[in-house]
Length: 136
Image (tube, rainbow, N blue to C red; front, side):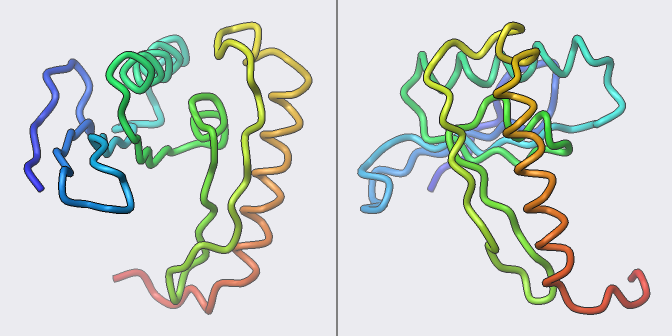
């Protein structure tokens, strides 16, 4: 797997060529994370839209590690909710919105329901996790 740092104003986007991975069917993989949650909301929204454009225009498989529920729902087709200690996927939520991902979707009742469902899944996953212990 070869990694390329994407030329962008925001960090966290890595593109990997994965021709030998059968589970990806030879698709290109983009691993992305939002670098900061304190960014201005309009900038976060633009980055979400940029990520969608990359996914759509370059036919990529994207693994995105967001830092908020809203960031997780907006650009996603599926969200994997993880529980800690031991780290594991506790639930996969399908984001079943077939329409455009734009400001109309962000303000829609369906978006609110999906965010609520994800929030509940995170609470459940938190309850499944072992003791927090002392930070390291």
